[in-house]
Amino acid sequence: MAARRISSLVTRSFSASSSLSASLLSSLGRNSSKNGGFKRFSTATALEELIVPTVQISYTQNLIDGKFVDAASGKTFPTYDPRTGEVIAHVAEGDAEDINCAVSAARKAFDEGPWPKMTPYERSRILLRFADLVEKHSEELAALETWNNGKPHEQAAKSELPLLIRLFHYYAGWADKIHGLTVPADGPHHVQTLHEPIGVAGQIIPWNFPLIMFAWKVGPALACGNTIVLKTAEQTPLTALYVAKLFHEAGLPPGVLNVVSGYGPTAGAALASHMDVDKVAFTGSTDTGKIVLELAAKSNLKPVTLELGGKSPFIVCEDADVDKAVELAHFALFFNQGQCCCAGSRTFVHERVYDEFLEKAKARALRRVVGDPFKKGVEQGPQIDSQQFEKVLRYIRSGIESNATLECGGGRLGTRGYFIQPTVFSNVTDDMLIAKEEIFGPVQSILKFKDLDEVIRRANTTRYGLAAGVFTKNIDTANTLTRALRTGTVWINCFDVFDAAIPFGGYKMSGIGREKGIYSLHNYLQVKAVVTPLKNTAWL
Image (tube, rainbow, N blue to C red; front, side):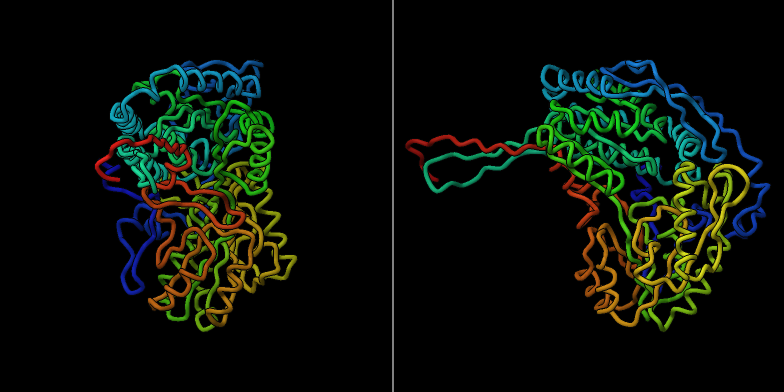
């Protein structure tokens, strides 16, 4: 099965002396010469002759207590095709009243329903049946993800859907392996710990990886026996509603998973501040994360996990194979239209290889294939919406005004939709906005450094600490940087390796807690100590 063959979202990984994986490069469309005649940045014709997806949009209502229902207000909101800016569908606009209904359903399902009382093995079987249904419907889901999000269809179909399936296999495997401990005491007492589900989990997911973020949140929560109210990103509600329906086909009891679409200030705020929600998990911007944390604290002091923004350094050392470093740095920044919280958006290059790296990085950006994400070989689709599109262009203007050198790109591509030219800046300094703030777009900033002490200091001089990349042949250099960089992940000679078992999260203002792996289970469990006196015991 595809899910068993691919364990990572997308992986660029190689030793400093080895060649890149031909099959991976082929699947990601590395070489413009293989892409059916696309030129630099693609062409206007490629952007205008759009493929019409054949997938049917079946689910646009909120899912509450096992049923699709209209918003209580009767309101809907449009969701768009970022290739054109045209409306795809109108989706039920949930607000506080809908959140109340969803939380009530989740509470009843947790307190009275069969889900927490099922054996862990039974819960595991439902998760596995869901994964099988996702695999069965993967073509429709990949098409829907690309249509609503704008990411390349090859990326959605060949990398993200297989990882979605793998993640639920992974959490299904954990469901019957969650247990407490027997603890020795300093007296005649039997002490044990119980690991109990936390209750009703509120979850708010972002728009850049809708299905993957669904899995990161829903998988561990269900494996631990919790019930859920999930708010989709208003930009990308369609695939979460689709897979939630598949969960009920797999046998998930009503009320265990509720999905509400709506806006952050209404539905999101209502969920974060709800007095009957036991825990909140949020992925998104750092500024919004602060609001979520404040709302949770001011309501019932519910625990919060946050996966937030980043300004990740990608460090190219003086011993680097420049060609390979250029390719990996390009991937680290431009993947998913640059819309990655962990994007390698500060490319630090040693002064001895800086000039060569810069020329080759510029040439690689000029070869990047931009166009209709449904077309084979396209590496870059549109930004998610007009707001993000304008934000990225403002940062590009800021770079120019700050006297960074615009090597290529810098503007809109085509006449409709939200396509931006792959952009490269050189002569970037640490005080520029493009070097300090999260752009979330296809803009590479290349900075020069002299030695390890300097680059460590500069890489750590940021409010973020989500991830970092290091490219070197020297194991001592790699070890030095690994321990010095204040980030939740350090990728050595690879980037964006997102295996299901690898924890992901940030230092500093990049978040609280970890997603994926065994660490994600801790977010959805309470630990209870049970102490019983012992009499006439043979041993302690």
